[in-house]
Amino acid sequence: SKSERRADAGEPSEGESKTRTDGGNDPVPVTSIRTFLGTISSPLALALTGVLALNLFVVQAVTGFYPTYLVEIKGFTPGTAATLFSFLFVCAIVVQLVSGVLSDAIGTRRTLVLLLAAMFLALPLVTVANDVLQLVLVTALASSSFGVMPIGYQHLSNILPPEARGSGFGLLR
Image 1: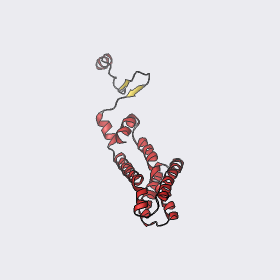
Image 2: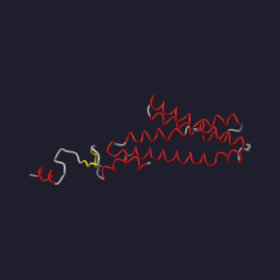
Image 3: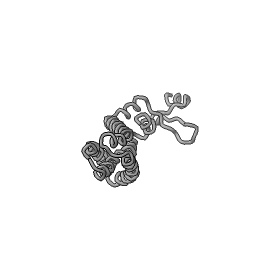
Image 4: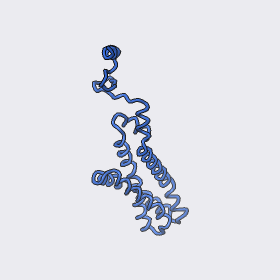
């Protein structure tokens, strides 16, 4: 019979899932390329990947040029610029902790929206802030961009189905 031939060939019988073993005792699901591509090309996964890429670009731009901007454009001393730059990273530590707690309390989507809104509000405010106190506040607000990646990666991982979570996340990341 057809089921017996499948069993002899090591293939699953009808109704069984296709699995393989990786040397351990737990079966590892085998997904088709079509299923995998369909999973990672969902509109939500692609949109979130785009947002995370944009955030990464902004973080790299800020960390690469913020001290120079403060000295060359705003006219602050290198010491003040370095202090504000250090403050950005101190705030980033706090933001990552707070964003994790906030994500647990209100969910990853809402947390991402709040963090992104704070980041996009802070960027133009940097251009109009003229004294140290204003820049301290704007720098603290801009540090919200550092909270986006951990929460975004968590959300991206959660929206992918379990059978493609590791490989899909790895490819999209």
